Image (cartoon, rainbow, N blue to C red; front, side, top):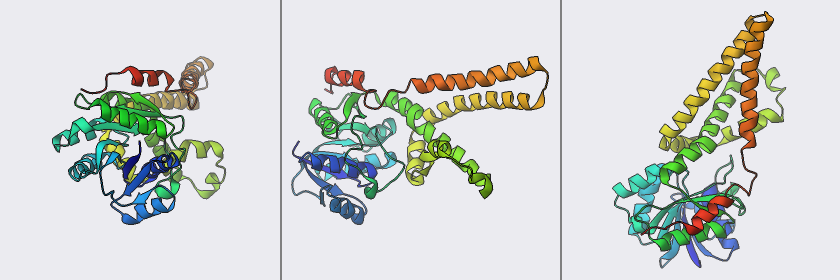
Length: 303
């Protein structure tokens, strides 16, 4: 790949552009806020402004509900031969792109699985996606060359391309990203009810579990709203677990008879054990996508 464009110079878009520039790809930066594009350019992410001729690949790095509109605009303006996006929801942007009349043969959904709780171009890093999965969601209309270019983009950014269906992706990120963010935010909101003497006892554990709550509210409202049903399903199951634990704790606080306490203690212990078992299933960083990368190499890519 010799040339690319990034539409949207926030954390993700600027990080992609920085990685491309580090690999010698001529990269153009476009943003609805020209100052954001200029800031990214000053960081060495590329050239602020549109190219004179179509580039090989354009990355639409905007929130999910803006993808279809941006894709239609820049396909109409012939920004690039091929297009992908970087939104963390795939099914609804694909559906809206079809409704908008976008050229789906030259578009493949993409989602680099890397991020930070910070936002904006100044938070960007050229190694943000190193060793991470980068999901591609081709539709039946997507041509093979478009998928290949998006796969090359992922590899230039140090990531491992992974092919998934749109709905499969959205269910996966509801479990591994979107619901955890919301749980972190809800727990952090409880701190509004604590006085300063209590908060003064906070340690690293509280910092760890509430880190995600520092994310951009507008962006996460867009993300969660775009994947609402899948996230709601995960949270409903989580709420059932919370109710079981609350009942166990209430029981332990109310009863003194050993046999009754044993029942509540066993339920609490079982909940903690399931947590240990679930955490143990998280792949070590850099290893989780290896099996799926093979699927990328062998999967049919469009028509």
